[in-house]
Image (cartoon, rainbow, N blue to C red; front, top):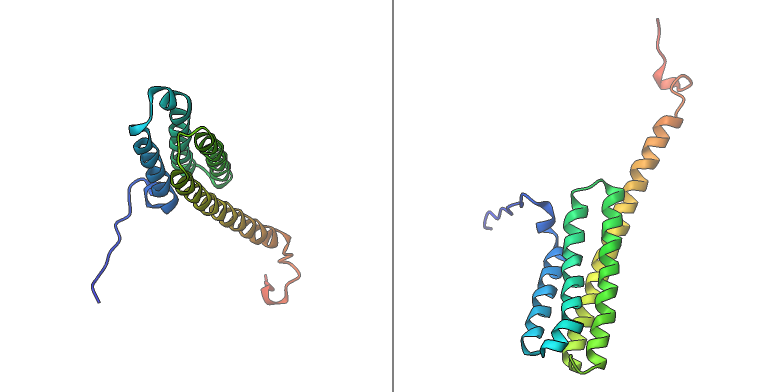
Length: 152
């Protein structure tokens, strides 16, 4: 086998697959705007691009915070994903996106929602696990444990 070493980025969020997916989605939105009229760009695609960029921004910003704050930033990222769903639907219903573009957008947004949701659940479980072990330690009466008898 080859010796494969994975380089870790200085900014840890750059190693997150969901961050890469958010960047790819933003790039995809920008590509869709190439063939759109100025009106379509201004009214529909600009807000979509803004919301798409905020998905990645929230992931990046939250990753540098404590767990409860990171969870909140991930929830904010999910809100931006839902905004993208609404704007993509508007784009489809108003002829800016064809069916294929809409389906591609929707699939990507569903996948990102699942990824962000899984991160939130994982972080919450880790927080609960750490909280439970702390409270177990605090609740232990070390004076009554026979295995910990001290002689003076």
